[in-house]
Amino acid sequence: MALGTPQKVILGVISVPVILLVLVVIFWDPNLVKGTVEEKVEDVKGHGITFGNIEHSLLSPGKIAIHDVNIQGEITNATIAKVMVDLDVSQAINRRIILDRIELQDADFKIDMKKFNAFIEAEKNAEPEVDVEADIEAEIPLETLLLQAIRLKNFNFEDTSALQQFDVQGLDISIYDVLVVDNYEVVALSAEAPISAKIAIGNIEAMQMPLGQFATNLEITEKVTDIKSLKLDTGSSLVQLSGTLANLQDIADIRIDLAPSRIDFEEFKPLLNDLPIQPSGVLELSGDFLTSGDLSDPASLTKALTGSVELGLEQGKLLGIDVNQIVTSFKDSKETSLQDVGGFLISGPIGLIASNVFDLGGSASGLEGETLIPQLKIKGAMEQGNIVLKDTALATDKYRLAFDGAINPSEGTFKDFTFAVLDKAGCADLKQTLNGEMSQPTSAIAESLLDTAISPLTGLISSVKKTVSKCKPFYQGDVAHPSQG
Image 1 (tube, one colour):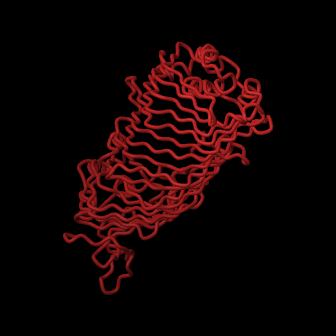
Image 2: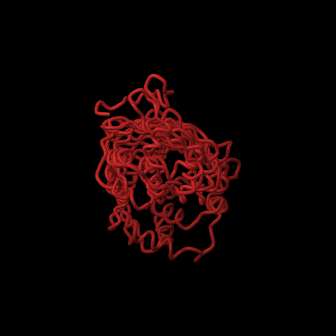
């Protein structure tokens, strides 16, 4: 297993207290190992380390306490109030190091991510990768190295650069039964020696967004991370999931089970500022997702995506589009051109589902303003990259719109995708099916409109409108018809 430059920097700075503890166990004189630890820190450009009082006892169980660890450097400045270790001294004479507990308390890390990123970029390909297993075996010739419990309590991490990428407060991590060396061989993270970890964070802020509390329970091997549970709770938003991440360095296999969750768009507003259509309100969501592919090629993951998803939004709003204006203008027109039809269907309601906005001339005015969304329900199945919608509808304060069929985001195509404006009975006042490329809406619409595409609009509507008593409902789901419609 090879160690890249980013991992080396992180390990070089953060793992110093652990290196010190292992060397203290071996040599049992803190004064003898301070110089060795300082040499380790010199591997990371521009960093130094100092220690306060070091207490230790040979009485079984052995104990070490290191106070006031300080790391100073161009990239990272950190303080760790106390590092403690308990170990089974009786085993050390047989080259068996069993650490009952390693605990780091009250740490504060200030990291300049702008300098860190620049350092990583400069160091790329500057030196050969280090073989971690060979390095460990060379420095620690042990029959056994077992870390029964590693705890990080009340850690804070902050990006102090202008990027301000993160601010993590109150991080607690517990890792159990880490078998690093067995019978003089490195076995850490092998299938036979998985690591169990619990992570809890009191408060996270990322990209200047407060993300609240975080907790997860993991089992980790070199190739598979089993997410037993993961929870992010901001108060208004709640994300709960489990799953597995396998072979992330090769062809990844990813499974995610999303338990009933909710997203308050207001809390994630910085991520939405560049979108042409910005939602507000609280989105309810759940589903399951399975995919495989190369992480460096997101399209491959999308193409292999299977699973299901359910979304719901009540008392929401869409900023940047007036769906009512689009529908009203279209229905009140005396006649229409093929481009106008494309503009309405693609730039308007279809665009909300496909997350694409097309510049199609006459419809551009509908991409301004806002739309109240009292209710939205989406039920979709993922089938090899296709998102197949069933029982999907949204209601504005004036109209009810329903969708059925498939879109393929990776290919940018519609597949028997039908859009309908509904009446009170759930029948289609106006219905249109699309097939073809999203980037060429004229072609997609022409395939289904045929000779009616250039007919007067009144003829188009009359070809699909039925009387309430005779119509076949297009939608009979949970989204209610607006009282004004």
